Amino acid sequence: MKKQVMTVALIGTMLCCGLLMGTAFAAKGMNHGERRGLSMEDRQERLELKLEKRLELMADLLDLSEAQQLQVRAVHEQEQAKLEPYRQQMDEGHEALRGLLDSDIFDEAAIRSLAATQANFKTEMMVSRARVRHQTFALLNAEQQALAKKLQPLLHNQDRQRPGR
Image 1 (tube, helix red, strand yellow):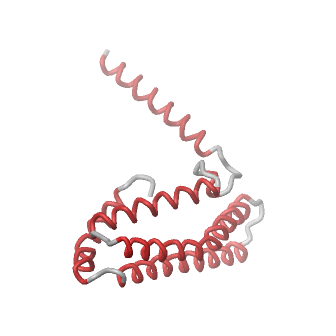
Image 2 (cartoon, one colour):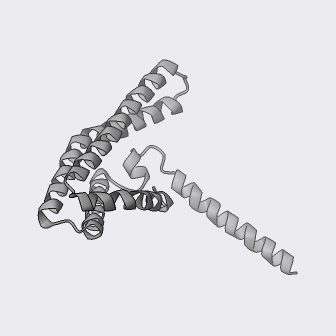
Image 3 (cartoon, rainbow, N blue to C red):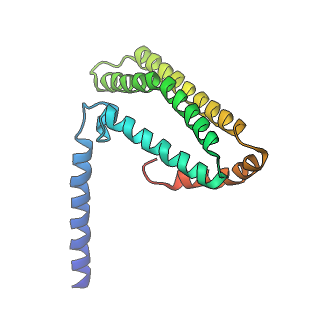
């Protein structure tokens, strides 16, 4: 009897999960941000909140002065402004790729071209991230730099364990 109850409960759970996953993937045709349930404005707001949290954490852990906090914020905001066109182009490229994949005709040259363009955008974003990191590190004093080097692996692993990343 217990085995039957457990089996029914397991099947019921699987069905519920299946229905939830089905509705999650039914959002076909929306742009990259909307598929995640976010408009471009919401996504921008989310990025700003994430930046705010990171800057607060950095200020607390490294004991940044007010001047350092303003300088670090300026570096981050400057790079974010530079990256916004790339983010938009990435979203547009993602939608174009979706269109190519959904097409009845396989156009390998177009897919390769689009994939190469997307790779270039991702490269620019990686370089930007490295530039921000380097510029931020240069704003720290020797003590803060030493502490940042020690904390970096810990914070990096924490980011990887966080869901939704």
